[in-house]
Image 1: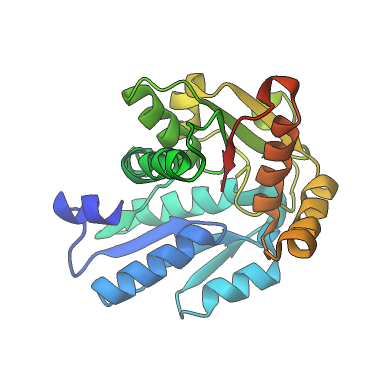
Image 2 (image 1 turned 135 degrees about the horizontal axis):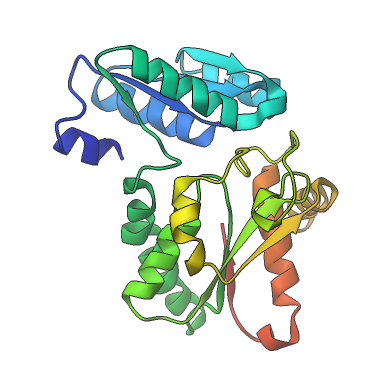
Amino acid sequence: IIEQAIARGEISEDTEIVEASSGNVAFALSAILQARLKKKPRIFISKMHGETKIRAVRISGVPVMLTAANAGTALAKEKSVAYAGRKKGVFEVNQHSNPDNPSAHCLSTGPELYHQCHLLTGQAPAEFVAGLGSGGTAIGVAMFRDEINASFKVIGVEPEEASLLTGGTFCAHRFSGLAPGFVTDIVEAGRHRLAKIETVSWREGFDVCRKMLIEEGLLVGASTGASIAVALRRARLPENSGKVIVTI
C-alpha cells in the first residue's frame, strides 16, 4: 500500500499518514515508515483490543488515538477518516477499502503458499483458511487462485460473537484482527470468491492457542487460534481426507 501510494505521488516528505488498526498494520506501518521515510503514522485503535496490544503499538513511539471498546474498529475507522478529511496533507492508508491491500496478497501471499505447498507436500492446497479482518489476505489469495485457474477453496473465519457476515450481530470480542464491526469494502467486493465463512467461539479459539503452545511449541494469538480451529475442523471432513489445508 505504501509503495504504491509513493509511486502515485500520494505520499511525500510532508504527508502525515493515518490508519485505524487493531495492531498488525500499525506495527508494519511504524516499521516501514520510520525506516524509509523517518516518520511515524498516527494510529486510531479501539480499546476493545486490550491494554497489552495498545502498549505494543505504543512501543515504537507512534501517536495512538483510542476509541470506545463497544464499537470496535468501526469507530476507530470513522475517527481516522474524519481526521484525514479535516486536515490537508494527510494520507489515510484505508486497509479496509484500498484495493492495493488484496492486490499485495494476490502478488505475494497467494503464489507463496501455492508454490510452497507443492514443494513441501507434492500437491496443491485443497483449502486455504483465513481470518476476516480487512479481508485483504483471503480475497487476495482467492484473486490469485482465479488468475491461475486453480481450484482450491478459500474459507473465511469470523468470531461467533461478532458474526456480521453470517447473519449475526456485532459485539466487542477478543479476536483482535478479526471482525472490525462493519463489512469492509474489500470483503463486500470479493465475497463471491469465498467458498464459505465459518464462525469460532472465543473458547474454541483460545483452547486451540493453548494446544498450539503445548503440542507444537508455537505461541500464537487469538485470531490465529481461530483460523487454526477452522482449519482443523475442515481437515476432519471426510472429503478432505489426505488433502492439504493451509492457514496462517
